[in-house]
Image 1 (cartoon, rainbow, N blue to C red):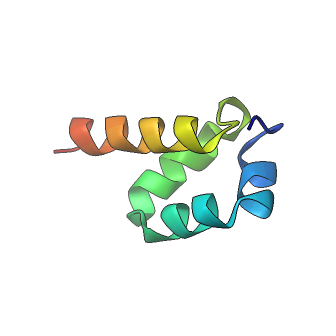
Image 2 (cartoon, one colour):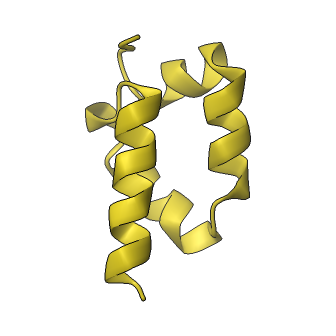
Length: 56
């Protein structure tokens, strides 16, 4: 399901909120800076995985 942005996604998808809460602080900050482009749980997961790989 698509949402307007990260805030709406986290408010309406408990699974996305749980996943987001478990991410490292620096990854969360980077995701929040791109919140308008994150509109689904899949996009959140993909973005986080890409950040984790580039930070490794």
